[in-house]
Length: 307
Ligand code: A3P
Image (tube, rainbow, N blue to C red; front, side, top):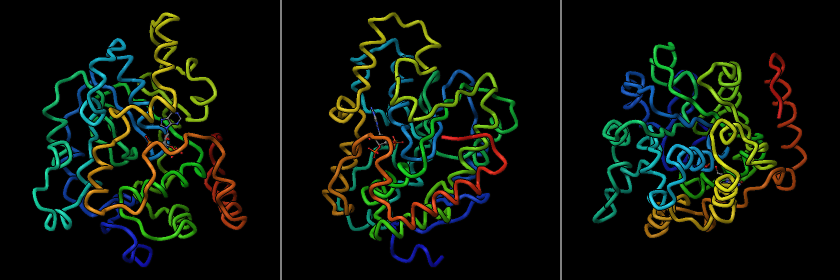
């Protein structure tokens, strides 16, 4: 508990070992019992590992590169299962006149249920908190998991928490929270490894952010589809960092503007920060870097996973 004193907007609970915003307790059972449709594609990830990038890529491929339809916000095209637990401004809502949050924010689960299949579903939930039908294998939708090295993820998450979760602490403290598994959806390794262990299941595709950066057109998501060379080139261009940053349909500008308007954020950057690999090392102190090394070694002792 000591970790969270006044540093974030919401309080936290631990659900099956996972740190979650308080409000998750109200949604946990409904998510567990959520009716899964096998026609859907699930985009699963720890936050800040390339979720939006992957969502846009998958949505575009599923929708035959319909760039006109793709101008609709990604929040609508690829609904976020547990969004209501994260974007919980009930305390602030009381003080904001004419609070005009759209339905996908206020009741994300209902919004998802009301969206017709086949659809994309976004979730940051780790395996143990996913709907029962997925965990017991009775429903097998295509699940695309994306991950990213923890140091860059941590730096990106720090900025994200300042932007969205009202974090007011410093970076060093945030790194300690990250390592201690005390940020939303942590522990980090407990998130990755259960998907890594299931990577050979036919309905699971495991991606790494670093591979997408190196060679996007060779990503398995591209390869598994019958796109011709021209389509691959168009999609690659559409998904470049600069184009994603400038694309209001994927940069959450409405949410960011809302937070700014109501003084709910302590960060003046944007959702798409710099999209680089390896930048974290320059931002972390030698002590924190060493802690990351030890923590990684310890957590991967019994796994063949590496970045
Ligand atoms: P940075 O904060 O390091 O820039 P998520 O969607 O899971 O929240 O991940 C956000 C991270 O993905 C951000 O990282 C963002 O810039 C990065 N990202 C989004 N689109 C990208 C792209 N086209 N190329 C590279 N990185 C991208």
